[in-house]
Image (cartoon, rainbow, N blue to C red):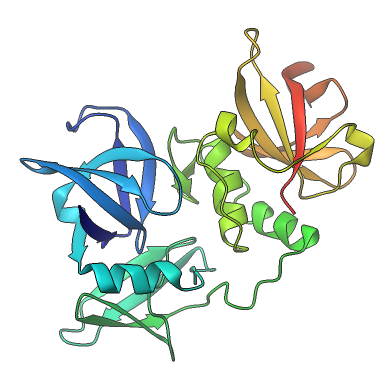
Length: 258
């Protein structure tokens, strides 16, 4: 077993070791991984924080000693709060532009470091974020109008479960990657009237499989990624899109994560 960390701003995690393969998810700078196989220019990995595997370009991963990997893994996560920010390599002044949600390992006094490399961070972090429902809502709204991207989890492309996972991660709460798996954790809320803004609402298809998720907002509204991150009306039946004049998603379950 080898241990690694994502060293590029965003790395597409693919289903198979090929550029043409489906993107299952995206890694962001600072994500920790277990390396399970290396095949030519591709590395198969498993995420350290949750049970999810994919293939990435080998150049996107920096191998770590187990001791450093374990040390970073045990730290409280520090994530980039701004839509964009910068890292400056203190040795050669090379700049890396980060996006909202990137991780800053070994963060201290405005610097982040790993594998003998140190970077000065220019931006703001979620270090002082509190875990309150109204803060969850505020963070979700920062993704408004981001384009939909299957497997995406950044403001420049995100899917429904990427939106919920990253929003909660920015507040120190880790949930699974896919909507169907997210729906298995947390505390069930029996009725929409009992739910609070910030709770997660899941929707199923005609076969009863959870396929969509969004975050409840005040005033019977929901923010979710469908075409782009948007706000729509919701009631006990599901999501109602006024522009289509119909319900587009049928409510399956409501969950509180804290």
